[in-house]
Each structure stands twice: as C-alpha cells, then as structure tokens.
Length: 110
Image (cartoon, rainbow, N blue to C red):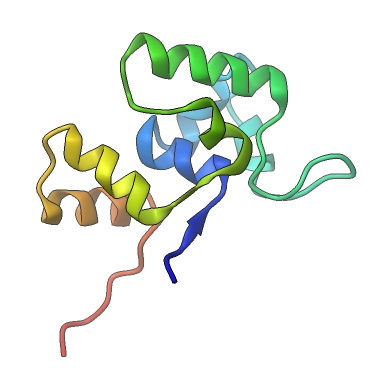
C-alpha cells in the first residue's frame, strides 16, 4: 500500500514549500500553516476553496502537473513521484526533494 498525500502535501511536493503557499493562494503568508490542522468545515490537509482555485491557476500557468483532483482528494505518493520524474528529476533527486519538503522520512541504509 502506498502513502496517500493530502491536498496540502501535494502542493508542498509539486508547487512550493509551505511558507510560500499562502501567498500563492492569495491569503496571508502564514495561513497555509493552519491548513495542516482541521477546522469545523475542513479536514486537516485540505485547502480552502478560494486558495485552492488560485493555487491551481498558479500551477497550470507554470505547467507543474497539478490536477484539480489533487487539490480535492490529494494523491498517492507514486503519482507525485511520477510527476516529479516527468519534470526530469532522477529517482534520487525526487527522494531528496520530498525529504527537503518534509514529505519523506530519511531511512537509514541497512
């Protein structure tokens, strides 16, 4: 079974670090940090609709491979790895990128 990423995790992996997503979404720079925590109307990792539309427009304008479904449902990790690989990243670069974004834990070699 592969790991499922939330919509917020997908954005962190494919678009920008968390610190930049609030501004991309047209809200306060620190707003994206609150998206990690659920609210009365939104699950943890979900992105508010207005911000999600702006993030999608940003991603589409830059051909980043983000689909509307990613911002609604998230995605499985292999899907995200495939998008990053299609951008020309090697397997090692993909793993390093995801670790730097806090989405993969570094596993010690046995």
